[in-house]
Image (cartoon, rainbow, N blue to C red; front, side, top):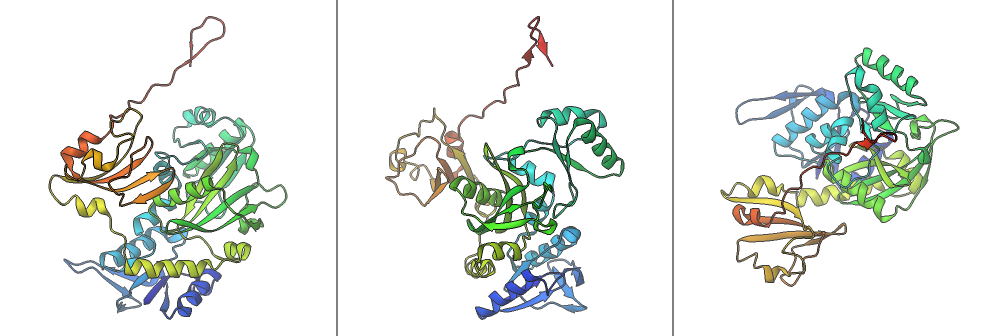
Length: 397
């Protein structure tokens, strides 16, 4: 294969390891400075120029887009995609994952543990937001911060309020996040390639530092993740559309809590801690994807008028519970069950004798009218009950 490595640091550890892994498998890989591209837009002819010359064809590109050039880097990756070249990381996924607020918003709809988080602009709402995430101490995060920069621990409400007001006064957007005390100074990074964790490490902060980033002097050790941590890490990467990702999680009493999903995770720390050839795993996965590229079924199949793709869970009152696919006559009703997800495991192309159980998640393609009849009723969101005052039993705000 002919691979383009988009990076501004061709001699750094990650770039060097990816180049070694690709060349050892007989591929040609070229480091390309992301900022030296020019994007050309014409009718039916998207094009890219590099250092004043029109680029040749690449079988695949591996984007290593730094936080400081996210906007332009994602635009370059998007142009490669428009020209029909495969990108290991999709441009949309890079943009979403790099935006801390946007990525947490995407994750919050799913069964993914995450610290309670608030985002406000009105100064009058700061105290209420701090209260909603559990009160002081709280973590204050700049939306644009990386490698632990712009992450502040505020021990009291007054300190938190002062910090937030100061940062907002400097036109900085900040997140207010619950401080998970039991994980102070420690977190876990799971390195995802495709649909599995290929390596994982625990990072521990140095001294009294609460941030465990290696760039801030933190130490690392290899760790074998429990199944729930693996499930959450893989699912978080999938939700954001990332094929390769570093998922950072806190080890809380309630289980894994996702802090961040990194679209360009470094290789030096994870390979040093685990002695696993992560670069080789990435190139091996890239080979598979170029041969068998992923297809977005929702985009392709809904082109047929009256047909759709949908995913839904089997709720307790469902008439499908404890029946086989054959008994439900779904194929005769013009519905194909593409997969069943059960307890985190995917059952692809299930046979007719497969029984549907409560809690299963079905991915189906078929006639829209039939699918509408299978979908469970939407649950109405229940309003939160107000607490009663101790003295007179009146609602307490």
